[in-house]
Length: 414
Image (cartoon, rainbow, N blue to C red):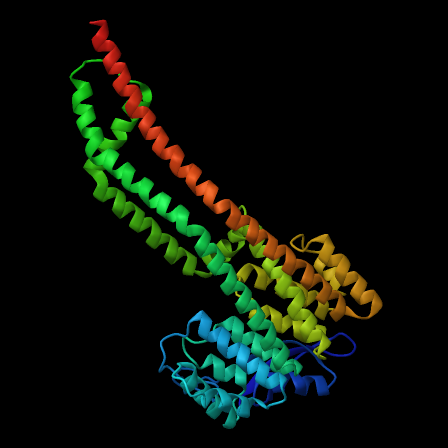
């Protein structure tokens, strides 16, 4: 049986450390709760062999890798169907059997069959999902683990299905909004390439014979054309090197932390990401607390389910303060990231003793705000893209026309 290392707060506020044996992390949480301890962190203990390697445990292989990757639509279908079956009263293993026995051909059938076998062998559902390589994200698996710990797996799956449906619809709306601007932008790029590669060199040769002083804009455009004509290969290599360097930097811990922080401050996109996190934070915390999970456990599970490293560290600091005995309101006030509106919602919830209901109201508010921000962004995409293309094409056309007019005027003066 796996061993888990833990840190937990006792009833008098002291932090205790130790280890215990449990089938899963969810069972470890329950064992600590029965001992009147409030878990702060739980991690699986790794045994080291004499040669220095880490010993394998029952939580490792086998791994299901017969399917390369499930699409977003297939994950949505699986989540919706499983949540409906569980909500109807079926247990997890029979519910997976129903999905497995579907008549139509689907990649979900072998996945459901393998998951059902793992559950029958005593593996927790969240760990079985993690072993489905390239099928389910870490966020999805962590949310399922939270549902198992809270005894609220149907509610968590339903929330995930709603989230997937919203994100799928938003992606479709953004894709549809980008179709026309993409065509215009591509046409503008092709037109610019034709201007710079074919028309401008011929125009340069013609204008140079007049001996006239060309306007500054025209001279700059000719210089850019000559540079790209001579060093186009260097430009491509520079762009490729910059993209590769950025990708490698972002994969480092420091780079990923910095990039996750920068994303939250980007114009337009940053506010959307912040609102999305606040909606998920409120909804998930409300679901966990309403199903009997302690606030510390809920924050720990929520921290693990957050993919953004900056936000994960933020939740870790909040978890530490709550574990030391502070209220959630006091912990949130220490970080300017959380808006006053959410803090007021949490304050009311703690004062009335119904934190879950207060957080649920906050989640609905941020869900509406998130949808509105996405709608405004998709509305702005088309005119902004067309404006940018029009400015570039207009600038090139203006430079060429002024150069021609200046040369013609000089010839007339002669």
